[in-house]
Amino acid sequence: MPQGQVPPSRIAYRIDQVTQQILDLGVTPGGVLLVHCAFSAVGPIEDGPLGLIAALQAALGPDGTLVMPSMSDVDDQPFDPRTTPCLGMGIVAHTFWQLPDVWRSDNPHAFAARGPEAARITAPHPVDVPHGPDSPVGRVYELDGQVLLLGVGHHANTTIHLAEYLAGVRYRRRKQLVLLVDGQPAPFHYEEIDHCCENFQFVDEWLDAQGRQRRGEVGHAEARLARSRDIVAVVVERLRNNETLFLHPVGVCEQCDEAHAYRLQVIRSGAGRIGE
Ligand SMILES: [Zn+2]
Image (cartoon, rainbow, N blue to C red; front, side, top):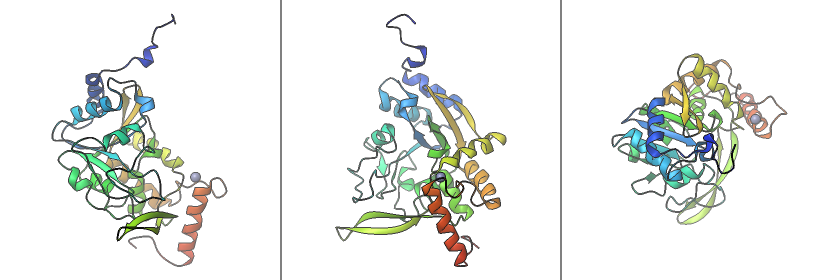
């Protein structure tokens, strides 16, 4: 390639081009859209992360609600929705919660939202069940929202944790957070449905096999789009047949080992699955 020429793959997209890509993928104008994003894969785009947010909003229109993860990066400091960074979820998520008219839930497992359903999605939610039915992700499901993965695979898809909860999986990992209690920082212990999440990648095949996932490009990134309800449906069905299918075999990974050990303890104590 001649010197100074930008490789075609690195040409910056205009915002209106990205909006068109998002619409072509099948995002519903006026709907609820939960986005997980790795901007390094999407860009460059005109105006950077702000340009991508503008393109998403333009595709959704004024009646649509845009939702992004907005959780705390650390578990040893109390969460403050006005100041706590969310860099772990990427620069787009971290940019989004700081914009005008964006609501952010007051919870270390926060999500942020803008649009008509934003207040409902970011209403108070329990700390000890981060992605259950009474959580931002659960509300996106209830509202029949869509989930958009930009430059990330299903390992980043928090809606799968909702499906694990609804399937009644018995594995957990022990977690600790610092909460403000009467204005004072205090440790809070709880158990969360969690593991390394690597095997969430299986969900690609399950959704594709049933034609319940759209794939395309947004900016330069590989994009996946599915209804929250479709993700939950395919995952719950499989987990009911094989509760541990997302966990690595024992001895491969520390996080999955912890989840296995917790589950065995629950089984030995004679407790059934949630809802039984
Ligand atoms: Zn693992």
